[in-house]
Image (cartoon, rainbow, N blue to C red; front, top):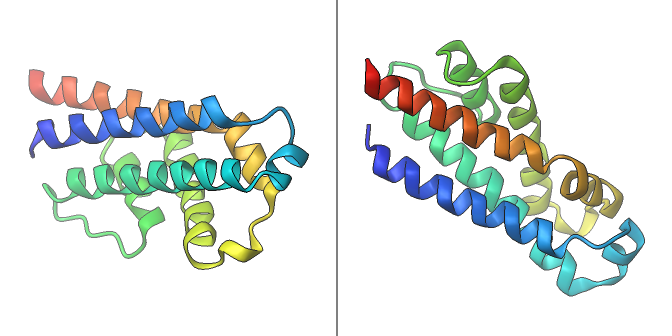
Length: 141
């Protein structure tokens, strides 16, 4: 496994999280009426999910585990003791937002997007911390 690739992806993930933090307005109503903020926030949330999926599949490529869905990749990382159950479940749920953002953009519920941007960014931070911790342990072994 190329830990440099994962490290670079973790930096990109952190940049997406920071961008969402910087641009999340004080209310869902403001988000709903500001198309520029919508684009910035949804694009960076979408990227954060996709980067996390890329990291998960990169780690799984070293094993015989082949996920049949993007969400299952996170469950498999839990089974391989890379992620805690809570983080794996939270990340698996994030795939749903990504799918709506990519395939059904016109039906996005801005209250849901606001809730994710204002209260669930820590899911991505926790994912990054657990992956880094696993990489450190893996290097020791």
